[in-house]
Image 1: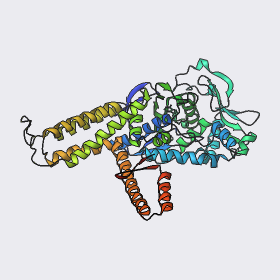
Image 2 (image 1 turned 30 degrees about the horizontal axis):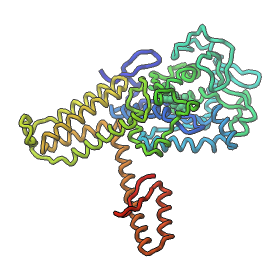
Image 3 (image 1 turned 60 degrees about the vertical axis):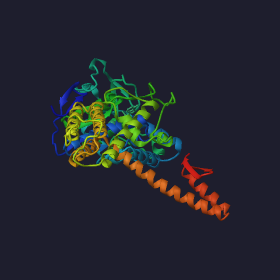
Image 4 (image 1 turned 180 degrees about the horizontal axis):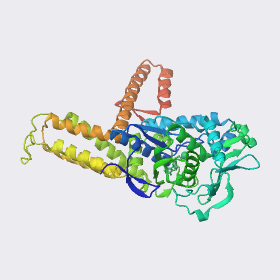
Length: 486
Ligand code: AMP
Ligand code: ZN
């Protein structure tokens, strides 16, 4: 049937037909970099990664852009509290997102535009909207979008135009989801904006862009005029994406995005994640607790994006086991003797040379693709992969040797699905780091033992401190020194 997506815009599941299969244009709303991204954000970003990797796996050329929101109400407020400009304030958070994305095995996107680099384009877009009488300037030099002048307003979120409170305005970036009002394209400058370097000159007065406008302009300039896919978390449908449509289509007269995909919000231990409940978890915190990147990736990715996903400790343990099963199977296949396909003594029903592994691999790849094609049903796709794991293990249990081409077909199947899943990829990288660390620790322990033999206690202590700084704890016992991560 081919690839299908559930399109929020049409409320139906549709065949995916990009404008240009060589360059599928995708824009995903990225993080607001006023603090550390949490694992809920990463559910959404890992979904972007899945879309990115799966489209490439299917043979499409992909041009994927995810922005950084580096100016809005929240960044300005936080930068002021920190007493620095927004550029200096936001930079470390942008770096942290990229580091964590790398750690979780997210393939790099083509571009990570920052809103502040596009203010010129934003002013141009506002000018067009003013010319087209879709926007108006207020006395203080702010500019608002007139939603009553744009009949399509509400088409994404299904908001009833009857609710529209024409002429009533909302200027904040963090307003309620039911406020169907004219929204700010440009906000007249306030002293606090100047304080943190968040003000620009414009023909109607100095000020700064509204948040919705930022994404329209980055999307239009870097991917548009018409995007194939626009992605984001479900909270962005209204007003953020509704407003992006109004501004973009109002200015270009063309459809802004053809397929809109929205990720359901992550829950934590059964509850909505929020700072006030104290269940706000970051990737960094989990890594510090010793959870593996591959397990975090697995857990955040394992449910289809429109389904409920509950992040839990028990789930993380199950994810660790799932990743281990994949890694172990690949190790086992690599080590398993090759030959003519000799059955083990206990199982005479399995003939020598049978084609179990290649046939299993083919079935698994087919099941994987059918599930992924169905609106990126990752849990179905993982189901096909883990059936395969069971089948291969059973086959290897029963066979002392397997034909080389059979074994290779099974290994290729794992490698192929992992181009999308990225689980072996991340686990391999972590194993490499672990092996490097172990070599270094062993070498330091030997140097410390030598220092102690020479009664150079200061040096021995210095080595212990050096290890402690890297989180390594030593335990001296009768059989020598053992170590663990603290
Ligand atoms: P923000 O940094 O709040 O602008 O969010 C960046 C992206 O993460 C947006 O696409 C949000 O919709 C998404 N997001 C925020 N919270 C969650 C959550 N709890 N679960 C999934 N996605 C989220
Ligand atoms: Zn956005």
